[in-house]
Image (cartoon, rainbow, N blue to C red; front, side):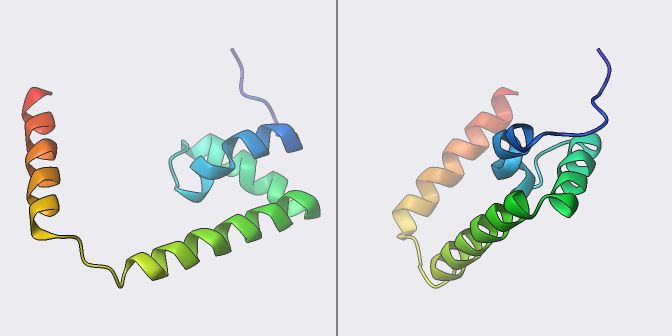
Length: 84
């Protein structure tokens, strides 16, 4: 199966969260970015979602998780790491 030369608005919309989290492969990242560079409607949606994520991250940076929760999550992550 060959890679598309360009993405549609629908293609970009389905991948926008992964694009923002940088979880796409290099080819998909490039295709999404190329579309955002040429489509103002999608670029506007991208900017809005990026601002929302930045705002949430900023607010979360000021929160401190309870020690018990940190220990439980750390233990679960370690257990999962050893299972693989």
